[in-house]
Image 1 (cartoon, rainbow, N blue to C red):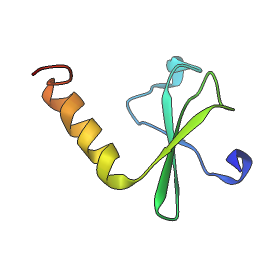
Image 2 (cartoon, helix red, strand yellow):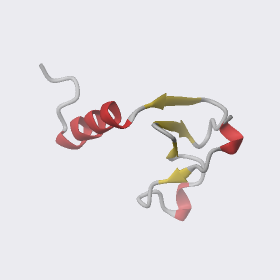
Image 3 (cartoon, one colour):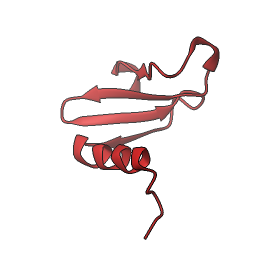
Image 4 (cartoon, rainbow, N blue to C red):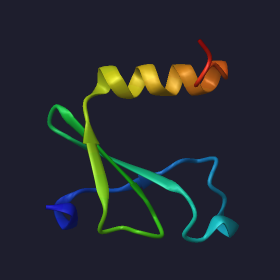
Amino acid sequence: MPDALRWQKSSFSGADAGDTCVELAPASAAIHIRESDTPTTHLTTTPTPLHALLATLKAGTLGRR
């Protein structure tokens, strides 16, 4: 299945980033996530939990109680 996905890396990953970036591949109602240096391993999620994770990371509140 990973071969059929169209992986996209962040525009923040410059050309010099090489194989050290996170890539996303949308597929139907799911979103696949992988690290480019291990392309055969990926996670699958849906938009709602991914949005919550990204909002938490952006706010800098991960791990706070």
